[in-house]
Length: 325
Image (cartoon, rainbow, N blue to C red):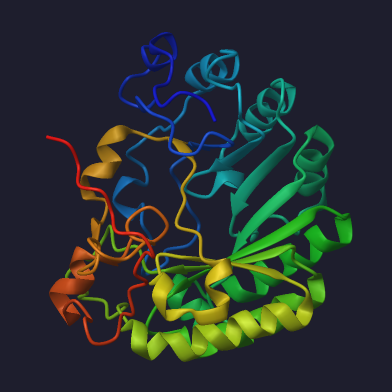
């Protein structure tokens, strides 16, 4: 693990973009091209689409070329917006692939444009070996309603099929919301024939619409059965699941798939001003909180309460030592 602070020479390139600290020193997530051809109802960046510029090539290059900043980075993930809409995406890929120590270059995408063999082929030829594809519904009716774009499910599935046929590594991502929580296992079944390496399930991260005017929130007690069925489906198909922002203590034997860690992100730092804050009523006694388990968002607590009768804190065998004043 590297030191907690990033080199000031790197931060100074774009202090509005580059954080002062590493979040996770093995993965770098670079955001840029804040445009999208979908309009997902739970999108965490919708207010900055067409507003932020993200990591311009100069700042991105400065980070990649600094040996201290990149000392432990093994994966560079490229995201947006919809990354495939960025005109200079190939140049970002080239820079990432040339960086010493980088083993994987990932594109985070809705895959709707990747059925285009020219685009997909060029990205793979330049060094993209992982495609992290967002899919939030198991059929056209649900998916198209969540993306607010007719035909999106068909386009996403065509992109997933193209990635699989091209031999690149496929990974999927699904956000757990009120509209799809009973169909999470169905989504796994839809993508399973294309052999994704992992399937991420992210509990809603309400940076936008914290008051839930769109009806996306769902209680963890209601979504838990669907989450468990999805995790079981992943195991049956040999897919490694990853579950984020869901209470660790509710998962039983599936807790090994829980991971609330986040990469180091290059994004305008004011983005985090609206980021949801997390807390847990049992933070003082549960050994998983807050390091392994973020808990519940403040917006969730405001809506449903602390869930004190549902959560099951794991008490450490050894009492915590009091902090020194």
